[in-house]
Image 1 (tube, rainbow, N blue to C red):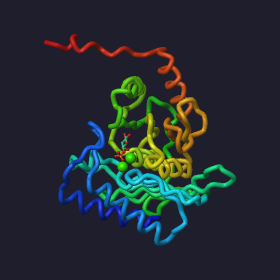
Image 2: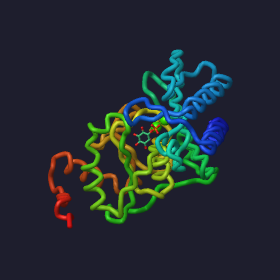
Image 3: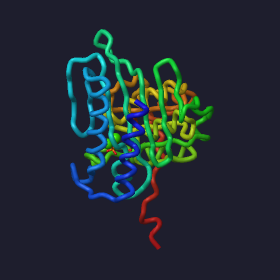
Length: 270
Ligand code: IPD
Ligand code: CA
Ligand code: CA
């Protein structure tokens, strides 16, 4: 998996350096030739090594052969950044094994070619960054945390996250919004962020990062604390220590309780 991710990452970097034409999947949902070429390469490599495995990739969809093994592939996570020349993007691949109808995450790889950072995890064997073990942070209070979130490009007018962004910003050191969910999860795993959440992520965004967080000692759940599943569409990851505090904030925000009001723009007009 690592070799495939590195090869796809190198391909992305070539495209990145030469500049690219942006195409649209939706009104602000971008895709480039690099997304497609990366997925073609990844599928070729998986087929060479594991011809019977199923593959779900963002650009080509599901190739279902009835296998117990399924790869979740995001050939380029952070396309909007990539298309604008902002160097925050990666390749993400997660592998699931189905046992008695139950999918278990068994391996995950995220490769950031701009920093040459390879995050890996294997079930029960910990998480690593370029071969060195990584662990989540030790921050125990929200007020000492740096956290991250993301906003979708698709159906963004239907996303309530700006309310959560505002409230959580006021209770932490700040909320970053870097534009690659897979890297956000890896940054929780390596202790750079203490938490991360996002609405409506897809399985290819989270399959690798979820395992990398768990194997680094962190916790991942839905917004009510129930177990995270690959198709949950609610992702809350943390170092574990601040998870309950984040869940509490989420339940308060959902209930509309204790919200700090936003100042009116008119108050600032000179
Ligand atoms: C996107 C990124 C972004 C997140 C969006 C995703 P893409 O993936 O992970 O950080 O906020 O929800 O769709 O489209 O660049 O693969
Ligand atoms: Ca993605
Ligand atoms: Ca993508």
